[in-house]
Amino acid sequence: MSSHTAEVVICGAGIAGIAAAYHLAVRRGVRGIVLVDERPPLSLTSDKSTECYRNWWPGPGNDMVALMNRSIDLLEELARESGNAFRMNRRGYLFATADPAQVPVFVERAREAEARGVGPARIHRRGASDYRPAPADGFENQPTGVDVITDPALALRHFPYLAPDTLAVLHARRCGWFSGQQLGMYLLERAREAGVRLLEGRVERIDARGGRVRSVRVSARGGEMTVATPRFVDAAGPFFAPVARLLGVEVPVFCERHAKVAFNDTLGAMPRSAPMTIWTDPVTLPWSDEERRDLAASAEHKRLVEEFPAGVHGRPEGAGESPVVLLIWTYDIEPVEPAFPIEFDASYGEICLRGMSRMVPALAGYLSRLPRVVVDGGYYTKTRENRFLAGPLPIEGAYVLGALSGYGLMASNGAADLLADHITGRPLPAYAPAFLLSRYDDPAYRERLEQWGDSGQL
Image (cartoon, rainbow, N blue to C red):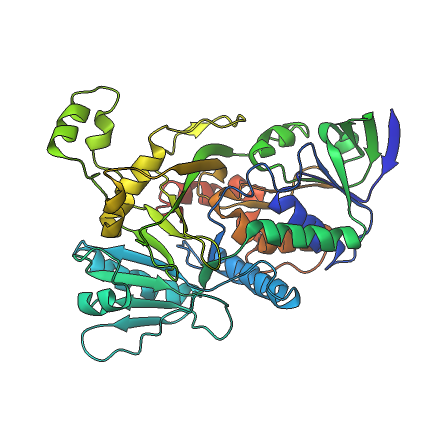
């Protein structure tokens, strides 16, 4: 068995682990960092999302908004220094409703978001409006905050592809998307230039005798090796909890399957310049009368004629003449044990397409002859309230960066920046306590969990 040394060993070369390595090595000057993963970088779940970002987050408090604003600041810095190698845009998130009861809710949420630091709330009612549409590309010199259009005619003038009964839209502006793979590889390249070593192997054991990290045992192609180190970071994505158990620590997380659908929108149903577009109303899938009768009579398929929850969403993908559209609908939220390869509902693609056609009626043109769809996905690794964990464990030298749920790409830089402050002993931002594992030791916090409400998951 060979022996090595490192100042920090990071388990997991997904976006969380790579961002941690980058922020420690490049921005904090820490040397001797080893990044361990048995798979190629960014290949497990980091490349399975819609690659979006947003500072649009609910409370309680403003911790998630503050963290995301910091993370987006860092993304914009990286975009500028790289010549926008990962194609960051700021098209926004567009929430739409046909429910009259939701219109005042949109206005209320915009006002609440302004108070949390999302940015100014601009309400556009009937008459003259200074609403400013988002450009398809770039992110500079764009408004922050939220625009709410409560005049249906104005909403459809700007977004004519939406259902004609749309009553209002809420356009969260410091939001958009980028290439997660390009971002991750840029961070990894910079980290390796700063001395980070990537080790292909599996963390098998962590020696934490005496209450502090001493070494990590890794099984690799060449056999087992021991890496002596005073610091270990668990950034293992969906395997976050099993790795924490190697330290004798239980982390309160669980996993949900999540999938995305990609298809070629040859009909041009969704404009190539559209923002991320989300329907905030529950949906009953469109079927013919005969189909509905047959489905309702089948124990296996009757769920397809029942009401589905709100939240179907999608966006155009790719530059230039790309016809690809991505769709996501997280309606299956049963906790599962992570296993690979992942099996998805065989009907998922059709369900998403039918659901999205409620918001974008032109998509109904595909329902008589469904297009070929590609379904891909991974896991959301979550805490109960859907706030990640970043900071020390109750073992000297042990740290966590995980439970980044469905927002790992957007939060990874802010979360890794926070973790790097913990590891290097720098002053911590005001939001740091909100992401500590020790928050669950506070009886008042545990009581708050019982009334938490919206977790921010789309």
